[in-house]
Length: 105
Image 1: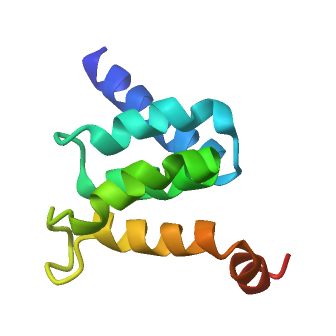
Image 2 (image 1 turned 90 degrees about the horizontal axis):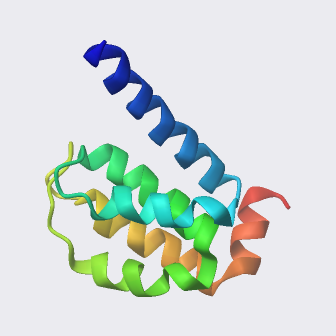
């Protein structure tokens, strides 16, 4: 049914995000596609961006820099999600020792 297909697609996106968060580089292209899909839910796009940065590492920097000024509103209109995530992930990529320290690794 159509509803199952939509649910399956959503589940697949979240599985892709989880894999990216774990650092699986093979999911970077699919994550980038989710981030760049303006019709997608902004919260999902923000999580996909975080996962993309973790999966693509330095290769994610151009997209992260491009989204620093993104004004797409989210739940908090004063904190556009893509810009907030971009800033955070750029900091983590540029300061990996700080990220490891924060994560206890």
